Image 1: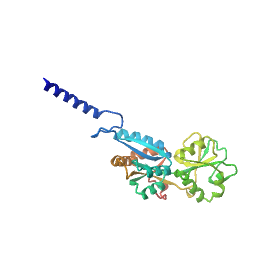
Image 2: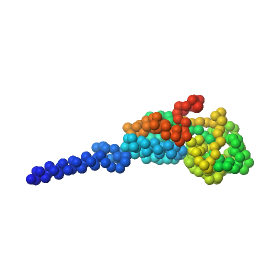
Image 3: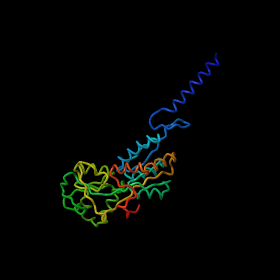
Length: 270
């Protein structure tokens, strides 16, 4: 009798283990330890919307949860260098990404989309901005990104300098945002008459966009790469592959990005 009870108990324990391994919160991946698989992705703040949707699709397809650390690309690089933790890096341009490569942080890489700088003005364009040179007009308040913290900050400076407008525009800069999202918000609220942001962030009823001619602009390519110190290298690579897949690129297109490669920007160097 005791032997029968023991056998029944063992069967019940086995059945419980099987069903426990097949259920759980979304994103759980069965493994020897039963732990939930997840990755941490350092991502430029300007790409938060498409990347949130990509994370949702990726988790639904693979069961791997994605945790983002959104911020300025340079700030994220500094965090990576200090902690040497995380799985994937996706800045707003290749500048910080190349620095990460030089430091030996990048295990693999893919090119995803183009980041196109544009001039943003509050709805109604109260300062009458028509071109980049107008950012140097008298009494115009300009907000730019912080060049030490975000890709659009460094690029904004380079565009101004490329067009030889340093002496007129820089005196009009009233603030520097740590992320492009801050710059977008402040411009939409009317705290600035004009700013330089990414094209894909200009889809707002509170903003109007003024395009910079290609000859005077500096278009960048968005990269993504798995990190060499990732504790989840297979999952990190799976995420990189998903972001740069046809499905991932279509999500970027839905959010106003031109995906890589494109004949429109065939002269842009990654």
